[in-house]
Length: 386
Image 1 (tube, rainbow, N blue to C red):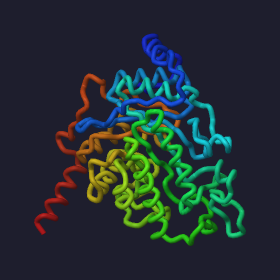
Image 2 (cartoon, rainbow, N blue to C red; image 1 turned 90 degrees about the vertical axis):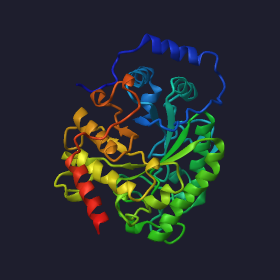
Image 3 (tube, rainbow, N blue to C red; image 1 turned 180 degrees about the vertical axis):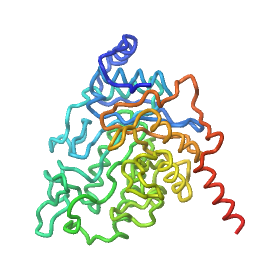
Image 4 (tube, helix red, strand yellow; image 1 turned 180 degrees about the horizontal axis):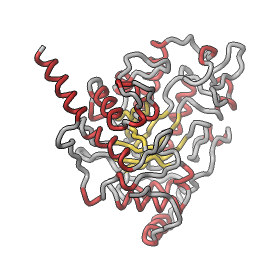
């Protein structure tokens, strides 16, 4: 089984559908019926970058993948970590030259996805923003001397305490809903973690308690503004938040944050876990065990119906193919979680890990049970006996 790659194969039928859907549609804002995640419908999606989404060749190949497999959701980058915004019509974005024309016909693309029954999610990187932080320094995280603080890669960040930064990101989210997205997914909804963070200065003194309150406050405001427009809200959080009881130094507390949103997506990429996490010598080589333990920890603390994990479909120090991807999916199913998202920064996905569309939107736990399942059952029984 080989990976599904974006090459030069193009479906004439899909291209015709695309052209027909585009014809005569010149409005800058399109009102569309939402493709809601119906009760009992498990969302299974992939990340698509703005550049992939803006390329007709790559777009049509992604559509072929949606047509052929169980995939039914697209997570499309609308604002990235450098601060680039791929959507027109937000005054502050346009006036500060943050718009990048990667998807010149975004409205038509969203329309096409919805015609096909694909749930459309707009991914917005919130507080890591190397554009507006420099254009409007008053919004940026500072050094003690008042200069703009930057992380290990030289990127500036927006101050999560500053409500003007909230408003900026929420205006982008509202614009995305106006052109048809069903859901807003907030990423980098956290305080900085990489670099000399002890030098970070914010608009108010930093503390773990206040940092957590700031992120929850942003999500409360997002809910107030986004839910009335008929869209859902989701967040991306560090994988370890599923079992960590502190804010991990970045303000993220999964229980408090999940209370404010419709879905939470912990990034449970096995390659991102340190050796011996969950007692696993090399987590990157044990994708099933890592995801199983992460999900098991999450459902003990939050509403399982809100859980939609990001799974790893890329290689980082260890080769990941269809088996490694499918084992992560199975780890979700063995915890009775039927929904998931696949991440690959290059948007190259393992076709062999995906079921065909005609197999239906269902899932089954392992039979016979895996060792991890048996261990969990034993723990539960022991607890009940006590």
